[in-house]
Amino acid sequence: MSTTGFLTTKSVRRSWYLYDWANSAFSTTVISLFLGPYLTSIAEGGADASGMISIWGLEMRPGSLFPYAISFSVFMQVFLLPIVGGVADRIKSRNGFLAFFAYLGSISTMCLYFVKDDRFALGAFLLITANISFGAAMVVANSYLPDLASPDQRDTLSSRGWSSGYAGGGLLLLLNIVFYAGYESFGITQVEAVRISLMSAGMWWAIFTLFTVRGLRSLNRPVGVVGAAALTVGFKELKNTVKDVRKYPETLKFLIAYLFYNDGIQTVIAISGTYAILQLKLSEISLIIAIVIVQVTAFAGALILGKLSNRIGAKKVVLITLVIWTIMVIITYALPAGQQNPYLVIAAGIGFVLGGSQALSRSLYSQVIPRSQEAQYFSFYEISERGTSWLGTFAFGVAYGLTGSYRQSVLLIIAFFIVGGLLLLRVNIRQAIEESGNPQPKVV
Image (cartoon, rainbow, N blue to C red):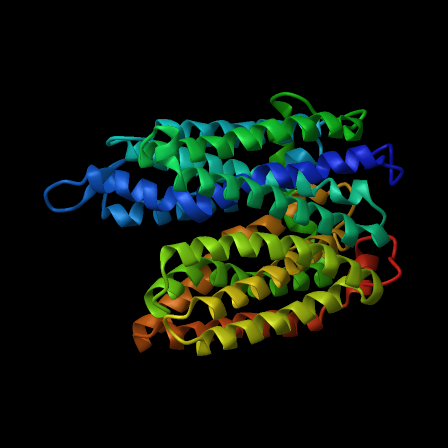
């Protein structure tokens, strides 16, 4: 626990917000838009006569490289993030630990500039490294939340962080879209525009992380492990946490609920582009516009729903967003093909609840985890968010295989929101806070 307690200055909190601003560039510019198509095109250029590529002894189609690299990085996070959490809870220089992963990720992202010609293996390696680092740094960053705000202030703090992320990621994305669209006026090729855009995301991540790392120095522990001893402590803390998790049954119930409804959210994000192009017959420019709209409305949604939670509690607001998510999916099922505007309206609605549901889930979880073990428990949270996000997409793929229709398959996503919502409804947040030994906020 920080020696500054909840008397944290506004400048320290702003430093923490800036990390969401910094790393969101990776999510928007790299993962959501540019790298998938670009890495696939590089792999296609290196394919053999049979249309296959070989990477690290594995044969695959070029189109499989990007999703396989993402999947492998997420798989590795399941094993690595709990160790990272254990170290972060005991290391003396927590901001230095955050800096290590943030800069490993941002430098890997900058190095994507050198992925060209037949260097698809380099691209896959850098993507895996950057995505693992992204998740590890988020575990450390999220662990600061209980140190930065009292229980009654935490929803607001988390919401401001998420809104900062959508603003930062959205701003760089917009700049890169403009740059990419006008590449000829800059005297470069289209491929060079993509490479520069990818590098810019790493630079953005690195530059703004400087302010975060500097601002969070005051929250470093006066005593703690250093050097190689940190790794040993990480394994020991993981063992103790797994043993003690049974002491917090309501917290475990929340994590299971979050696993389900977040999987619904991640599935919507993952298949929305495919659904728009293949089912609704929309253009790629419609997709780009929708991505920008989501960033703007998610920024607003995080702030507005954060304020609402101060009145009625985070749990109720998250449940409301799950109802809206369900309605949005039903409307998406009924959207007519070939019409852009209805799709953009749905994108705006999804963005609004996306910001609020993510921000308030994070703050709500911070209330129900034991002090001095924040990073360890946030590693499980990050795994629930990222390490299991294949469940919904897998179910969607099975449904499509059975029905042959994206429109019919999209209805399956509703089940994840309903199951997650019903499980969350049964979580006794007050009891979870009490079990964790934390002070009770006025509303939950």
